[in-house]
Every structure is written in structure tokens, then in C-alpha cells.
Amino acid sequence: MSANLSAILYLISGVLFILALRGLSSPETSRQGNLFGIIGMVIAVTVTFLSVSNFTSGFIYVIIFLAIGGSIGAFIAYRIPMTAMPELVAGFHSLVGLAAVFVAISAFINPSAFNLGTPGNIKLASLIEMAIGAAVGAITFSGSVIAFLKLQGIMSGAPITFKGQHLLNALLLILIVILTTYLCSTQSSNLFWILIAVSFLIGFLIIIPIGGADMPVVISMLNSYSGWAAAGIGFTLENTALIITGALVGSSGAILSYIMCKGMNRSFFNVILGGFGATDQSSTDKNKEQRPVKSGNADDAAFLMKNASSVIIVPGYGMAVAQAQHALREMVDTLKKNDIKVSYAIHPVAGRMPGHMNVLLAEANVPYDEVFELEEINNDFANADVAFVIGANDVTNPVAKTDPQSPIYGMPVLDVEKCKSVLFVKRSLSPGYAGIDNDLFYKENTLMLFADAKKMTEDITKNL
Amino acid sequence: MEIDPFIFRLSIFILSIFIGYYVVWSVTPSLHTPLMSVTNAISSVIIVGAIIAALSGNDGEVFSSSSVYGFLAIILAAVNIFGGFLVTQRMLAMYKKKKKDK
Image 1 (cartoon, each protein chain N blue to C red):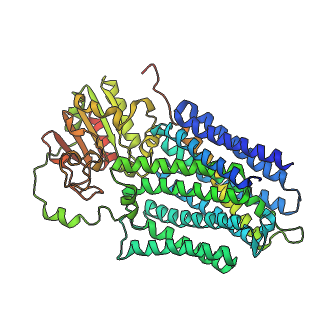
Image 2 (cartoon, chains in turn orange, red):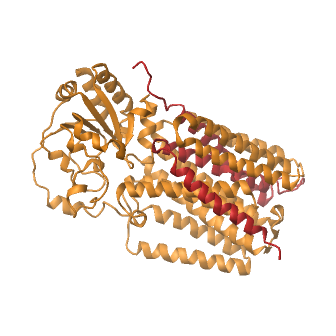
Image 3 (cartoon, each protein chain N blue to C red):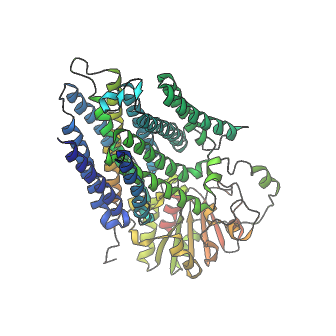
């Protein structure tokens, strides 16, 4: 296949990827968008096959390895529970990162296969692109592995901090730049290996200080990195499809990180530097006064809801942990039979990744037009009878609006306290991720339901 | 003077960032999770590099040091491509509108 024809086909596949993302602007067009993405991928892979002129026996192995990887991927995709989506995405990011590293290594060892020169005499521009691709890929890989371990619970979600952490990271980043510079002048393979090793280390170090509830930002950020790594490799390979895709994915992840940071009213650097919520424990213990709390059981909750005309549900990460989405939807069905209007309010950072709650509700067959974002629904709380908070905490804390001393001050929160009554399903009065007490617990109109979210929801349904 | 082809690729890159910016802002927040899984799948187009790397050996030596990395990258990218697109499809199939009769 001529180089021009394949370049055009790569361009087409890049355009199809743009359409794939475009499709996600509404659920109706999204399935078609996904199809465009698949077609784009098939075109890219086919063109690559056709443009490799020498059909060696390696070709068969390519097909075999493709099939092995493909079946593993398909198996995971069908088996994974929806609640584990954040872990899955983090895991997938690590694979993209590692693949980028491998391609860069291969190009470094055997540059002539990629038309980049000969070993020890690689074109300068290609070498820089390769180094960037490999470094970003390596950071993406080790960072995603840590994110995966934290989300999976294998590693504690608590931030891991030590003295001089930021200084160390800064020094390592400078070291990467120095290594890249020397690599370009000496073409030494040892430097290339060291560069990759240091990048692995950085990825590891920048994610360990970040706590569990900041994972939405981390995952989005790693998403962005995987895109930049792909773009770096795209420049090395002079491949339009990779460059376009890398840019798309890179900016997509960056925008998601921005949205998540805005949802917490924290700057990107504040999140990345990490350690949030870990230091405030002592101060909250000191100020802990015994404030009266009203607590109730499933019967009380059912009574309140039965007499309501509108109910707003506020789900959070706790719902995902308790796998309560199906029980919740059954409860809502019963409410609807009693002509009670029900809607769902989703905070941008609810859950462990962007849109986490929406997927879980969709899995439980909740129609997406009953699910609303913060800005859309926040004014409705004042007119609603009951707010049912299930597994959310910090995102409902009125302190964010009233107390400038609070670490979460200024964060957009759901105006849950404006409801006539608030039902708060929680296991205990323990503070949320931000390490602060939720004022909502002590409000006159709040009824605490101390129980497992799933069990409580089921019990309420029985009592309705 | 002729323009270095690198500049053309850089132009494509920069313009794609802008396209990405506008396209992603138009994605509805409820589909942010599928957005992440689909971007993940499409970034695995890096497999084109992996295939070239894997076929860099010659007939006598299918598994040279450089092609082994290519084969490994193929597996990783293939997991991502199939996993990413299929899981996205599975998620998107769940997003349903309210039934009119309810």
C-alpha cells in the first residue's frame, strides 16, 4: 500500500475517533459513536498490516498475540461488575502506558524498522519524541498501578506522605530533563534505561500521597497522561491516527481533571500534592462535642417517604461499596407506585471516577432522564419533601457554605438541608474523607439511619 | 525553503487538542465514565506501533530483542482495545430513557 494512501486512511481513522467522542454528547448517539470508534480502530490496524511489506512468519505471531490479548480484554469486559469500573479504567490506563514504553524501547533498539536512523545514530527529533513517549508512558504505568491498588483496596486508600516528598519529586523531574538532554547528545542506551526507571519511580511517588476520594482527579489525570504518551509515540512513528488520538485523549483527561477539581473547589496542584484530609484528624477530635442526633429505623423512614410528594435521592460512594443501587431502584419503584415524584441528584465528584454514580444507576435500570447534575437540581431541594442521602457525605455538608475555616469551604455542595426532612443512611457518625464533621447530621430536620445502605434500603421498601 | 514535515504533524497535533477540547466539553456529565473507557480504547491505537515493532525482525529471527517488545505491546494494547470498546458498549447499552407508560 502506498504511503500516501495509508496516511489518508490513518487520517480517516483519526476522524472516526473524533466522532466516537462526539457521540457521547447524548446517550442516544453514544452507541453509534462507539461503533465509529471500533471502525476507526479496525481501519488503523488493517492499514498497518497492509503497509508492512515483508510478510514474514512473524505475521502469524502478531495475529496470535492479538487474539490472546483480545480474548483477555473481552473476558474482562464481560465479567467486570459495574461497581469495579474505576479499578478497571485505572488498570487499562496502566496497559496503555506500558505499551507506549515497550514501543519506545523497541524503536530505540531497532530504529531502522521505523525509518528513524540506525542504532546509536537516531534522528534527534525522533529521539526526543521517543524519550517523551517512554517517560510519560512509564509514569502512566506505575501511577495507574498504584491507583488501581488503592481503588481495589489492596493498598490503603489513605495518603502516604513523608518529609521532603515534593522536593524529591521535583528533583526526579529535573533529573528526567537532564537525562533526556544527555541521551540526545550521547545516544547511550544505558541513559535510556535509567530514564525509564526514573519515570517509573516518579509515577509511583506522585500517586501514593493522594487519598481515595481524590481518585476521580487521579484517574482523569492518568487518562490524560496515557493520551500524551500515545501522542509522543505518534510523533516518533509519524502516524496521524496516533497523533490525533493522543491529542484527543490528552485533552479529554485534562478537562475531566479540571471538572473534578472544580467540583471540590480545589486547585489541581492542591490535589496532586496530596495528603488531603490526613492532617485534620487531631483537630476534629479535640472539638468533638456531643451534639444530639436524631436516629430512626426503616419504619420511620418509610413513613416519612410515604407522606411525601417528592423525594430526591443523593447517592455517593457508599452506595457503590454496599452495592445498593438495585435495592435503591426497587425502593424508588415502590415510591413511584404511590405517585411520589422521585429524582436523583449527582454531585460531580460523587464516587471514585467521573460519572461513576450515573453508570451504577443506569445499571440498576434507572432512566437517565431522572438523574440530574448538581446545577440542574440544586434549587429543587427547597421544594422537595424528603432527601434520601445514601453513601454520600462531604458533598452534602452545609459547612462548605457557612464556615470559611473549613477545609471544604467553597466547594459546591448539594443543598440537601433545605429539604423538609433529610434521611441520611450511614453506618456511623464518622467523618467523611475531608476528615470533618458533617453539620447535616445535627440538623433539626435530619433523621439518621444507622445501617448498611443496602439492607436499610431493602427494609424501607418492605415497610412502604 | 521547504517546511519540515514535523511542522505539519505538530499542526495536526495542536488542532486536535482544540477539537478534543470542544468535543469533550459537549459530552454530557452522565457519560463521563464511558468517555474514559472509550478514550482508553482509542488510545490503544498505539497498537500500530506495536505491530511495526513486532514485525521488525527478519525471517530467520522472528523474536529479536526489538520485536519481543513489540509482541508484548500487542498483547497489552489488544487487551485494552477489546476490553475498552466492549465495556463501553456494555455500559452504554444500560442508559435508557424513561418509558412513556410509567
